[in-house]
Structure formats: structure tokens, C-alpha cells
Image (cartoon, rainbow, N blue to C red; front, side):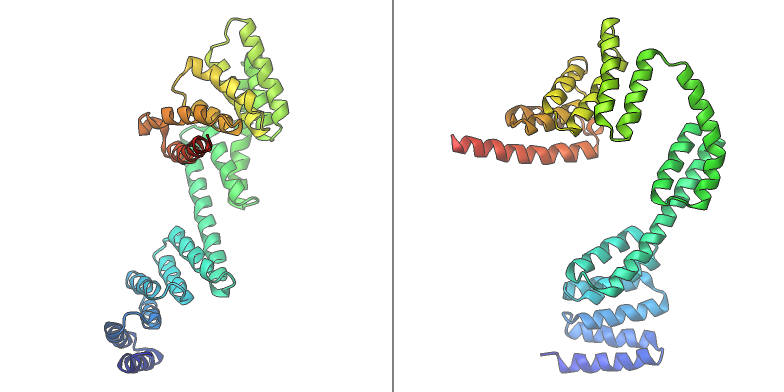
Length: 323
């Protein structure tokens, strides 16, 4: 049963709120929470007052207390998301809205706000990319500017600001690329074609081009050159995409014979070995990665390898138990 005194204070707070006396209302809601902090409505109403006063830090604190009081009280998530939006913490706002939608997936207020904030976040990202591209253009990094604008286009295709900048950058980039490609060797051209086909998800076609590159380099006695290592690595990625795990293992091994601490090759070979159910060998590669300095491995690869290690350890232990 609700505490009668706390409910009376809430009622007084509601009257102050209706009269626009938000500071006075807050004091009443605070008194109510001091009597019973487990009623989410007290915190929610307090947060609504802080919103009216534009005090988003205090609003966020009240909203978090609301969620703590009752994690199924959806309005608490709405209050916190509103505060985070006011703080311009758009990424945090999205996370809060997703948490609320996990409680009530059909809530119209949460769904509407999520859509609005995603648009704001996308606008911020595009503006950031455009600003970066402008800086790259000013410094003469045409290739960098072109790639940055391509990333922006993936977020907001048809954006007039992106298209306007692209109209300035693309002709310069294409002229620069034409000059660069004119100076490529036959083997470099094979690799370039492979890269282009890979980007289009034409993995079989990419494999053909990388194979031409590798075979030509080996015939010229350059089978362990830097270009050959790139071609082997990229062909391994293609083989993995089409589930040719034997091919993946073979090409990754070719890279590792020259560069034993190539993180990408070790992880890729471990993934292929797992696909071939050669779990112990896969685990060896993963342990090699995890024994390297964190800075060399990088967070994304470390997290991937760490997850694989736990999974492979479980599998190996289960196989041992089965005899």
C-alpha cells in the first residue's frame, strides 16, 4: 500500500506543478521520496519539473532514481532519454531508449523519440564527416577527402552538402587515380582488380585476380614480397567468405611463414580451423594473439580473440569429456 503521507506530498507537488511552481513542486516530491524512495512516480514527476527548469543534469539524476525504483516503469526511461537529449548525449539517449523499448517494445513515445534522435545523430555524423573532408581538401589529401565523403554518403545518401563537396573532390580524385594506376605493374593491377571485385562481393572473381598476382610474383621469384603477402591475405579473406576454410588456412599460413605475428592472419586462420573442427590448432593461434602486446593487437581484435578463446576452450573441454 502507498504511504499516505508520501501520497499527500505528491498531491501537493502536483498542484504546484500545475501552477508552474516547479521548484516548490520539486521540494514536495523530494519529501515524498525521503519517505518512500521506491515509488517511481515521485522521481518521474521530479524529473518532469527539472525539465521545465532546463536543469538536465538534475533531471537525469532523478530519472535514474526512477528507473532504480522500478525498472519496468517505462516513463523513467523516457525521462532519462529526454534529459540526455537535453545534455546533447545523443548516443547515451539512444541506449536509454533501447533499454526502455526492451521493457515495452510498442511504446509510441520511446519509438518516436528514438527516430528523432537517430536523425539528429545522423546529422551530427554527416556534419562531422563534411568538416573532416573540408580539412583534408585544404591540406591536399584528396584521397582522404573522397573516402570520408563516401562514408558520409553511406549514412545519408543524397545529402546536398555531401553531393556539393563530392562534385569538387571526385574529379580531382579520379584524375589522381588515373595517374596512379598508369604507373602500376601488371601484378599490382591484378591486386587492384581483386580489391575492386572484393568490394563488390564478387569473391570468386577476386580470387582469380589475386591468384594471377600471386602466380606471377612467384614466377618472378617474389613469392614472399610485401605485395604477395597482401594478395595472400586478401585471397584468404575471400576464401573465408565462401567457406573454403582449407584455402583460408593455406593462404594465412603463407603469410605467417613470412610474418609470424601477423594478427589478422592468425585470427583468420583460427576462424577457418574452427570451421574445420580443428579446435586445438585454432586455440593455439588465438593464444598466440592474446600473448601479444595489447597495442599491437588492438581492442577489436583482442575482444574477438578473447571471445573465441572462451568458446574454443569450452569445445575442447567437452571433447575431452567425451573421450
